Image 1 (tube, one colour):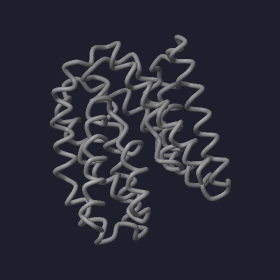
Image 2 (cartoon, helix red, strand yellow; image 1 turned 90 degrees about the vertical axis):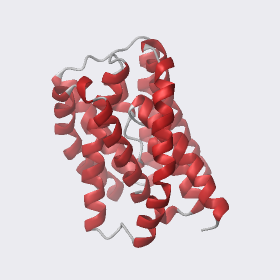
Image 3 (cartoon, helix red, strand yellow; image 1 turned 60 degrees about the horizontal axis):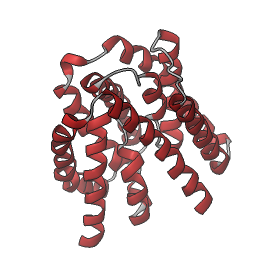
Image 4 (cartoon, one colour; image 1 turned 45 degrees about the vertical axis):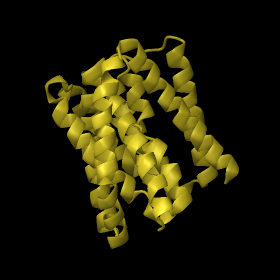
Length: 239
């Protein structure tokens, strides 16, 4: 990899880390397409390792605001959802699966902007966790379902709860990839070189968060979800 390619990836990771640390998700949505253009073999392990680092830092920072009960119920759905996502990848055409996820996310975002606010009750949390597992495993866009069900959380509570949920999910995914032999020495070296960019993005988020009141935070989270779906649809069309 050339220094120019590394610099491009580092900038993407910096921006993605800032978003992740501000709203609790978005790392893969912004950074994965850039890394895929440079070397698709670096995905998804590189992103998952850096996302794990950022989510650990955010969870520690916002630990006093965590909704542990809500995150716990969401994780109940996440594990079987991840298994289902892996099965769908195996049996469905990639293009059809991508379109299904993109349309579903966009429909949810539109409904949310129109006033739909699913209450973070037990059934909704388990369902959103399962949907996140399916989408995250199949397409690397797993934040949208949780953003919809937790859109009523404000500031540190949203960031911390989302980060705690994805911290455990990323850890499980990384362990599975390691067992499958998908975490190579090249990926470990690149991830290590990108740690400063991820930490810098996290640091910048501390200043950005001062301007994110409840209304702006909800708008940013829903907009990021919609952008992820649009990027997925565009990638499918170009593919």
